[in-house]
Length: 72
Image 1 (cartoon, rainbow, N blue to C red):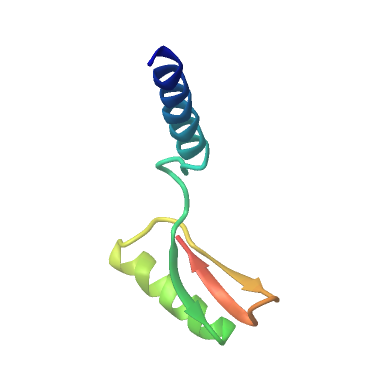
Image 2: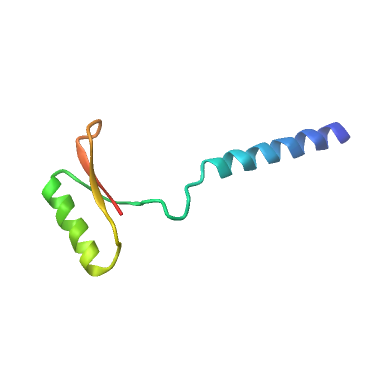
């Protein structure tokens, strides 16, 4: 019974550590849209800034998807 408990505790701790390592910090940018055209990404990013939805934003081209990603 002790061996089973020791293995179970080790497994729970390992799982908890792996989940906490992959967690993003609270101030991380979030994906707020995916656009085909750079101008559309810029328009929506600027509009969100004007509305107070976010303070800082950027449009990033992802060549493997052929889309612009709006991060704020």
